[in-house]
Length: 91
Image (cartoon, rainbow, N blue to C red; front, side):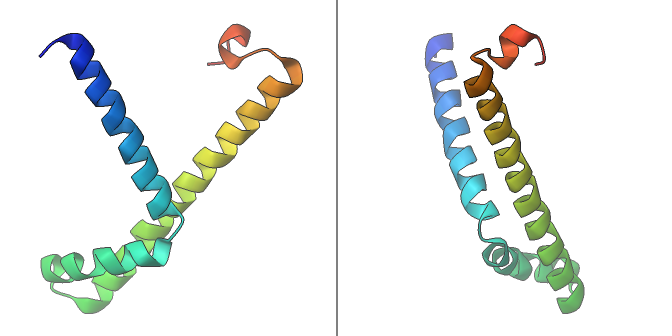
């Protein structure tokens, strides 16, 4: 496999994972329900699995929200000044 094909496949995978993470971040209780059952079998404790699933799902939702806020803020700054963050040297 050539390097160009590998990079294109890696880019496609990255965009799919990004979409999946954004979808998971917008529905934390759904993610908690999906995580709860496997954690219950692994930890063998219903309550701890539920608490851990809720913690992980809300941590994921918080990370996605912070990422969205930072990208919006960065894009807003570029639109106001017309200078990208790379040109400014802040990256």
